[in-house]
Image (cartoon, rainbow, N blue to C red; front, top):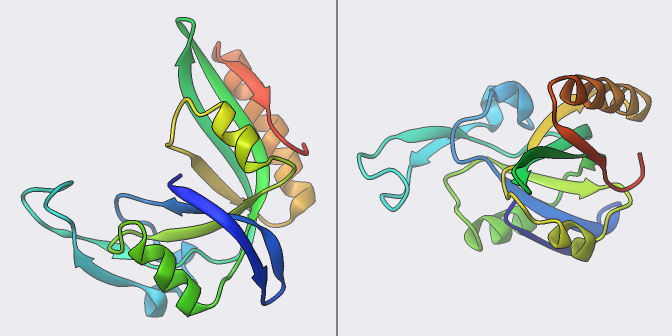
Length: 162
């Protein structure tokens, strides 16, 4: 999770987060699959020995997001649902230039949680996402993940509209 801002246009009117993956992502997650993928040299600041990763723009769809962190000596997990939206290529390129362009990018909208609410619980900028076929399945996957994490001993916190 890098940053975000409100975007209005092309069927989107929401606060859109920039999620970057500091490594490769599977082509199935990208718009266009392998055709939508490329590779660029990783920045020496992060990977001093070089190399590239598979880069692309995440395809639109419903997601379940989570982030795990330590608070008061215990493992916690924030969980929520959202969606990935497609932005125009020009806007995507602008967002890449503001962050780290060799990395895969996801344009995420988190359901029912504002920027300030998300940042108020900013214990980890590493967010995990999984795609769901539709919003109903996203809710079902959220409940399953919450039950599993609670069984493993994590304190689970639902965030936003769940």
